[in-house]
Length: 244
Image (cartoon, rainbow, N blue to C red; front, side, top):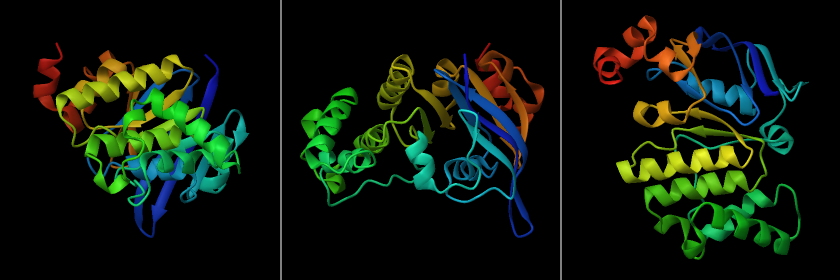
């Protein structure tokens, strides 16, 4: 598989606080890579550095071989990297359809073309019947679906999902897992931050583990659950025992 994203030695500091330190890994085409670790490990900070919400203090971000370090979030989105947020950012006064159309406007100034693009995305994400509901009236699972749908409307090659399963019940988590796998089958690559290991392990091709801002492990899911440093820092002995 061809390499799509590569981050090299990313460090991000906020004054004397080192949120990420010398982090490197890659994401290939048609691959789901998950980024895990305890709270405060630096996962969302790394997402922000990759997606242009603020520049890394040092290190490089490459997308399809191009150095995109320091580009704005808008520029990076136009290149094909789109992310969702840990705190859902649904536009409350807009309908589901209008929310998704805002993503489609990245590539068109035509309302009609944005509606056509949104209709296709709504169908893919199971939201067609809810297209006229305002964002403020949605359940948490539908708000998360809308955010994913809006991201998809920007036509990404790499979709970055920040805890899109948090707060969901088991049925809803399964739905999101199936959506992730379906998007991969359709040709997308995904970089996923998540704490729900029972969901992440079955869908991930590779897993990267952060702790205190540093990468402590990278590998296949079965390698990660048996990594002693990861068990000590994050998974715990109970998860390790249950995974056997």
